[in-house]
Picture 1 (tube, helix red, strand yellow):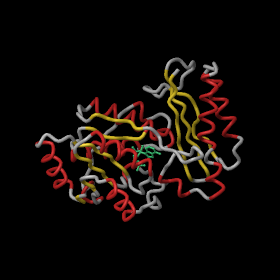
Picture 2: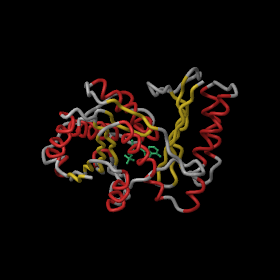
Picture 3: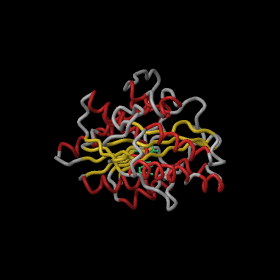
Length: 282
Ligand code: AMP
């Protein structure tokens, strides 16, 4: 595994592979890797000749009151885990090389960025789109792998890739969960033991809503009410940012659930914010 820090050198290295006709699979991450991240790496490994993973804690996607400073970091552990996956390039750029003085270009993807998490994290998706565009220009991936865990992010990256003619295939991978259903997340380490137990309520809520839809309740309003009632009864949840049913492309709330719909939740346990979702296919 080659460890590279400098964008220009990484770009040259990836280009060499592409010129030799090799496909490049790319997995962008912010580190503190868990089995969710590794599932993306394994999929990339299966489908490509060369696998590039990036670890970059992107300051652009954190608001001033968010957790950038205390975000979990474990670079030694990450390198150990990636060494076992037999990847080709680990790209760990420094902040100053990604955003040198005078950096001022930002990507705005538009309406889909304003919904769901966008309402509560202003500027977040512009930060995500900007760093992913930079990473795509450095790596030139044949395929890029993202988790369904961050469903809205996948919608935004897909749209950006289409709108700006990036030629990477965007591959969305299933959510990897703990035994009790909690979606794996680097942020789960913030939860204390009581919060950790209570956090499985997100998945139980999604399953309950999903079962209700499958058994014939297709009113968006009824499903919303059911999800909110369920989450309101979990004592350690201090805030429900959203819990609803959405069109999986436009991310608009739906009145009547038809073929496909997204059930999505964001809640807070104190200042710890957790998200989860299920894609419903009727
Ligand atoms: P992050 O390091 O949080 O930016 O995540 C890097 C990538 O891993 C993103 O595409 C996430 O959606 C994906 N990811 C995070 N958690 C999971 C999970 N539990 N299952 C599958 N993919 C995940």
